[in-house]
Image (cartoon, rainbow, N blue to C red):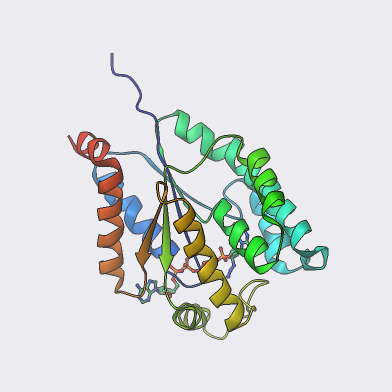
Length: 221
Ligand code: Z5A
């Protein structure tokens, strides 16, 4: 009888245009190449109810509630995402890759929205209820470069609630994600996201190997 291996939970974080979605797809493909079952998901969203909340939040309809109100909406979406999608997949032994997770609340609603740290700690405790990422990849690049990439991808389309923040806000966000990485080096790895997609992919794969060498080798066997 073969025991089901516990799944692993990996999150990708960083500012706008850092390449999280691009790299999540590439990492998923590499993990599948090792014979692992992989779930690709995102926040806000990832489950039906959380996707409905995503629409409300990114439309800007909740902006008037302030960062506290928005943080509660992100938390409600995250609780459903964890219950409906993340924990069941981990229990089945799957690897869950999420494009953003709780660190985004710390950076956007915390550093940018000036919510106090003790409030964020309490919210995180209740929301995550012990389910934390095994590895968080912080994709780091200068704010100007991230904004230019996101603008080019939008091709003149309308910016959403957070994309319309200015350069200073994006600089603050970058610093906030680097602070998060410094505060939790056992979980977080900072990746230079200004390099080519292939180089970023290789750096991420090296970080995953450093963290999960045994599992990746067994998966491929
Ligand atoms: N938010 C929050 O406030 N609080 C929370 O708790 C959570 C989220 C969970 C969700 O936006 C917003 O919600 C987000 C934070 C807030 N606000 N913003 N801005 P989203 O999900 O719609 O988008 P995003 O998470 O910000 O991701 P993004 O802007 O779509 O970027 P990305 O996923 O990091 O990048 P990408 O789509 O992979 O790449 C962007 C473009 O750059 C694309 O054309 C690529 O082809 C190109 N690219 C990617 N990598 C490279 C490299 N290495 N070189 C050159 N070009 C590249």
